[in-house]
Image (cartoon, rainbow, N blue to C red):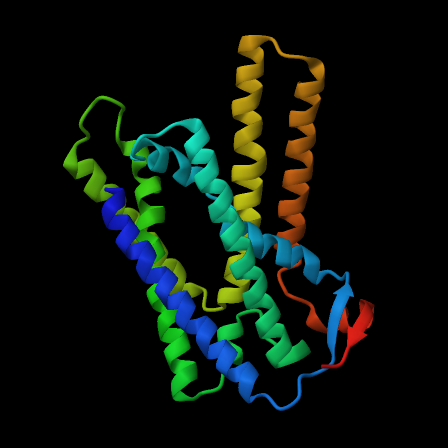
Length: 256
C-alpha cells in the first residue's frame, strides 16, 4: 500500500534534512573555504552523470505507483513527477555544492566519509542509513510487482520467496562492496543501460512494428540504444569522481 510507503519516504526526507543541517553547520564553522572550481569538464563528469541517473531513474516504480494513485490520470501523474524531479534536482545540486565547498578537491565520492569523526558526523551517517531503510521498501515493491497478475491474486509463497531472494542478494552484495560512492556509480551506469536504453528500445521497437510508425522514429530508437549503452559502458569504466583531474581542467576558479 502506497500509504505505508509514504511514511517510510517521509522518514527518508527527514533523514536527508538532518544531514543537510549538519553540512550547513560545518559550512558555518569553516573559517575559509578552499579554492573551488566553478566550471570545468573532466572524466568525473561521467561518474557525476551516472550518480545522478542512480537517483532519478524510477521507470521500474512508475506502474505500481500509478496503479495505486488516487484519482489517477496521465496528466496528474505527469505533474507529480515533474515537481518531484524539480525538488530532487535542487536537493542533489545543493548537497553536491555544499560538500564541495566545505571539503574542496579532497572530498570523497561518498561525502559521508569526509565528515569528521564527531558526534554530528556519526549522526549524519546514521541518518543516511535511515534514509536508505526508508526508500528500500519503495524499490522492493516495484521489484515484486511482476509477481502480481492484473486481476488475479498472487500466491503468497511466490511473493515471500521473491522478497527473501531479493533481500538476500542485497545483503550479500553489501558484504562484498563497501564503497558507496563507486556502488552508486555502478548502479547508475547499469540503470542507464537497462532502463534508459535497452528496455525502452525493445518496448518501443515492438510498438513501432505493431503500429507501423515512421523510419525516423525507428532510427531514434537505435540512437537511444547506442548512446545509452555507450554511456553505461563509459560510466562503468570511469567509476571515480576524478577530483584532481577537475582541478587541472578547471577554467573558472574562485576563492571564497
